[in-house]
Image (cartoon, rainbow, N blue to C red; front, side, top):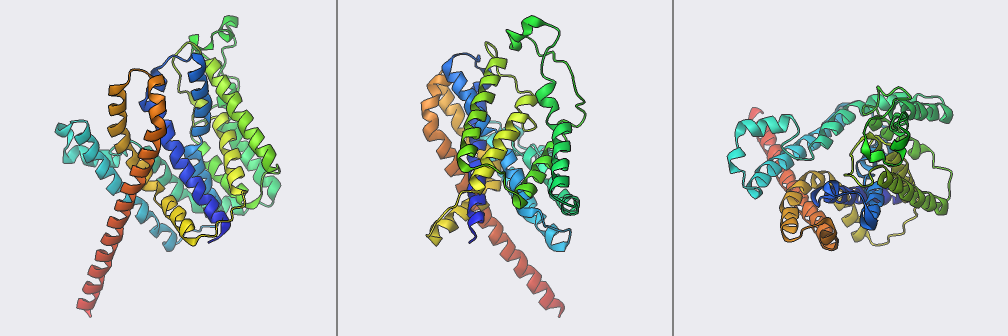
Length: 370
């Protein structure tokens, strides 16, 4: 197995772990706790790290699929995505309603509606996004691979950054009220300085092309500098978010989302760091285990919602505050990760079994025609 493949597998696994950590903040009342004190400061900093989760997945798509072309073999790969989504969404729809005691909500109409609207699985929005990206990839590759040189590719990244990311770092300040700077959480009224039409629509393409770029060119920084920049970025962005939300509830706005400057910077530094680590794993068994876990992350992402809706209410019912819950998360986060991977493995076995039956039926039908 190629060394960089292991690095990509580790990145996928890390991204899934970050997904679970981001949802942990949601389910343990981080967003309904006043932003003040050292605990919330640390959690603001950690959130900047965890939010790299989805962008890591997208960058890896660009890194690994930059040469894919539109053909029958490529389109066939969407079958696995669709089938995985259908099975995982079905499990989420049934089990979450059972866990929450909403058996009256179980109906064929609501199930079909949930599947089509990507809401049957609470985290189905990711599949909704990835379907579109998957279909666009061959055409994005035509654009990328026909640019003349490195400079043109850099210009493309810069343009996507300027129209899709930069507005979230600039159009977030109240410039008319001087007192706002002392208490920025007192008002969400900001002033636009640069155009923002493309915000929220181009970040996926930007992350994909960043993956393509990292495939061809490395960031010209040493590992030591990469680590230092990463730590400084996480801390500074975390401090800024703490300042922006101080003495108020954390506001989930565009400047802290997937399309933000902070997520972009942190994600690129994480991906570049791990991709360029030279791993020397001699055990073939270990590499296979890592590769298998990586393969299961897509299903595990969707299925983790089941365990989120199951475990966190139990924790919350026995604790009163976010601070009281934190020690238990050292056990709960790995537990949700393991359970999600395990259930994804069972889904994968079901798909393998179903594929064998499908091939057997096709074989018998063809034999009968002969």
